[in-house]
Figure 1: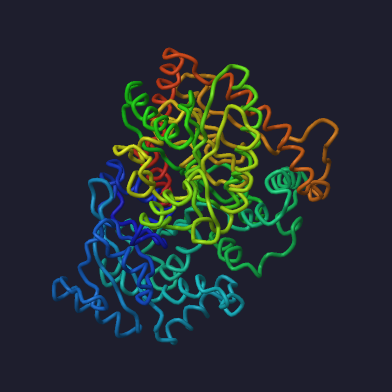
Figure 2 (figure 1 turned 90 degrees about the vertical axis):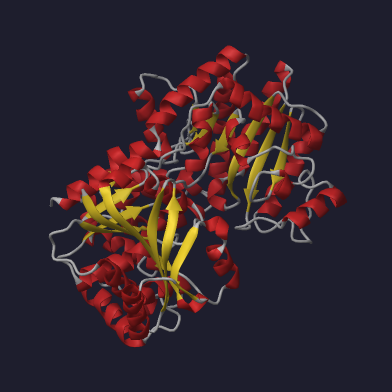
Amino acid sequence: MIDLIVHATHEAGRKVGGIGAVLDGLLGAEAYNRAVRRTVLVGTMNRYDSLLVGRLLAPSNGLEVIYAPVFGVNQAEADLAGRLSGVEQAFGVALLYGRRRFGQARHEVLLVDSIHARPEPVDTFKYFLWQHYGIDSTRYEYDLEYKDFVRSAPASYAALRSLVGPGDGSQVRFVLAHEWMGLPLAFAAQLNEPWAWRTAFYAHEMPTARNLVEFDGGHDTRFYNALRLANGNGLTLDDLFGDHSSFFKHALVRQAVRCDRILAVGDLVIEELRFLGGPFRHVAIDPVYNGVPWQPIALADKRASKAKLQAYAEALLGFRPDYVFTHVTRAVLSKALWRDLRVAEHLDWALAQRGKTAVLFMLSTWAPSGRRPEDVWRWEEEYGWPVRHRWDNGDLMDLEIPLYHAIVGFNWQSQAIKVVLVNQFGWDRERCGRRMPADMRFADIRLGTDVEFGQSIYEPFGIAQVEPLAAGALCTVSNVCGCVGFVQRTAAEAGLGEFPNLVVGDYTALPPGFQVHTPWDALHIGTYQRDQVEMANSAAVAQQIMAQLPTDDAAAERLLQAGQAVGRLMSWEVIARDYLLPSLQRAAVH
């Protein structure tokens, strides 16, 4: 039994992205709540950001605020209120304490606004970081995120201690640092009461690797060929790519080896961490994968959801497609949405040969909260959103603009497939317009799809890519997605051998005649070479999809049963029971 786990994360108060999905899954799992007596989530807030405060305090967020004088709330018992108030005065911060619902469980939340923090404890902490970890905060003060999490750490630890009391080492207490943002609190625990805490770092990505992939035209084709050749030559990331100490995330993650345990969401993240060299070559790193939502699904359920998607396509495009393809993701570079179109070019010809049609819904937005429903309804009337878009009125933004231009070019010449960019957050009539069926829900795009795309250039795991797995969809991913190894091993565990539901595009495999022999050769892979690889390898992906697409109910039922079997073994209950808890328990006895 673990007495206390403190989850240090920027998504403590509200789900924002991938870490929030992990917290929802793990903290709501029965296995987790049976094994952990108490859970506290610790993070930061900004009282002056009215938009974020509104979302934090919205009833839909499920956060019950007990103590937050800065927002006019104090329902805490007098003793607790006094302790928290003492921390606010001593450190010059504002605190919020409450409880959030995760599944059937409710866990404590502690948020710190440190904008007006007293400088003395912050400077003392920064000196500790420099003296013991070699982290020179003066190099990174330019970054507001770094500044916020380091500045908040002393007060966060003091407030946490006021909640849970001092430790004498007899209890099993963990600070679990989710990504670099959680490390300052873990280090603060090591500074103040090292005997009372065990610390663990949970790597949801390797930020330096992400930068090297995204900021070069060779993307994953270049980086992963270089990484594997470098490993064979005993080279580290800095040996090959140069010194990255000026990048604050790199500097912090390098010190994660000071934690009692390191966890990683995917097999490639482990490889990327080991690429840092030094202690990372041999330190224990446990895979603690992401899970997927699982529930029993019948073929009739899938057909009903697919029918809604087909009806929506017909309302938008004037034809009822035989197949529905989807890609649910953020419109960011790492998701490589252009690869969908490259595969679709090959699928278009193959489907036309069969006399079949398809629609590809890209539910993808750059805006964190999407567009206002009233704007969407007006754009639908004015120019036919989401089939048509504009970029001078708040509709298209940032990377959505070149993506839409590519979609227009594809749709102009395609025969069997049409692509629709739904650049919105949500999937119902209120958010997506009158032409969407009135009873459409987000679950329908997960249940009803035949193929889910997700061929990222950098993807530590890829929850969204495999969410439709249990609904019998073909999940089309790139070989650098962290979920690939987990899915394949789980399928073998389920006795399925070749698992038909997973289609893997290998965009790091170089064609014959285009080989690299040293890691320095790999550094010369650029945009032109990657384009050649993508054009060749996307054809292989399309062939796999065409071979597995169901042509009758019997084939659809086989895919559904296979997806159900594997999805059940990838549930959050399994992740909590078989991966997270054993890893922490091993750390507890060392």
